[in-house]
Length: 485
Ligand code: SAH
Ligand code: SF4
Ligand code: F3S
Image (cartoon, rainbow, N blue to C red):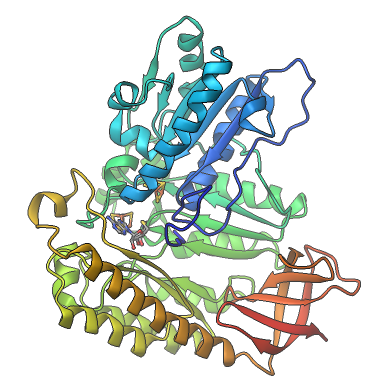
């Protein structure tokens, strides 16, 4: 997943895509009950909110523009760092005063914090009426009935099969050009710092036909870019047997009768040459040359890979249980550069101050960054999560000021590299898919290059959802500036 630091107030997110609360946007007669849904965390959580909105729409719910306006408020939560949970708690206490004025309002907590805390959440946050984990969204209509009958309602069962494959998401806060498609759920890795395997359960892949159909449907509606989402997309694996008998079956069946991620990418790329494909997140231990060659073969598969390294020290990586070393990671980078060239965008996630991280380990991270020269990174300091392997096995022994100082050093290094990488694009023409107005001015549009760099240029007569060639003539560390040619 793409992540940013915890600076975001509204969607304390690990994700940079959407920073405005999402609300259901369906036309509804005034008499309908209204839902307000607010999302935090990674892109998968935002994508899940679109599934929940679809389920609620079928129940006859319309949209509320604000929480004050709603009959039901859902908050789709993230547990990845302590700060993410604190933000949700603060938000819940704001809803408290709303509930005092309007006691009939239903407040539900969804997502990873719901899963982590389960019924404890009801004890700790008295205003919460409903708790639903990431695999329980089909049950929401029943849970709402229980609430109506005056009970508190909880479902945090994790499933081995649920992929919501047949549910057509209601696109929230959409620009009409780019959309997410979930291709798998859960995670079977056990990175020692990470709470996701506990909140999202076992890994399972979604039927490729339903993925291709969703992509085609989006294309027909005018969308021009889809991002295939999963915690570890390279371990996507699907066979008809898997659907019937669970994942264990595929492993026994050998290699011939399942579809892997490279094949899925190709299937989606064939929907239309004008549909751009992105994906996130790749895991260094699983990304294959087959994926890289597939990317090379199709112009419409964007040349951009988010390949989180977390640390540049093999010892730290081992304690993190990332199952690769510094050398293995650098070999993967070399393979990307070999097959896809210098122009391919590469980004990362970094954690500073993990258990036992020495100053030398930290310098290894900085030197790895110098070797790779990432275009972009999401950077965090370590936050111990209850129940994780690291919390059980290692002392959280780096003091906060050291964690933060190292984080600042990593951020400063990344700034330099982002600027350097952007400067490489100067005086070159890039194909850009227009996503809409620039943030600052209606006289300018913005879009992205294949390598995922934001480009701003004068509007002229150009329309969103179309491709333009832009000559880049200036840049900052964050943005390219140019003129269409
Ligand atoms: N599946 C993705 C990442 C999901 S979590 C992957 O494997 O890359 C997103 C990012 O949050 C992680 O890459 C990591 O950098 C960060 N993160 C996860 N747990 C954390 C923790 N306990 N403290 C600080 N950062 C954490
Ligand atoms: Fe967490 Fe690791 Fe799974 Fe990513 S791959 S979600 S960091 S356990
Ligand atoms: Fe995503 Fe946060 Fe859950 S990053 S998977 S919403 S813990």
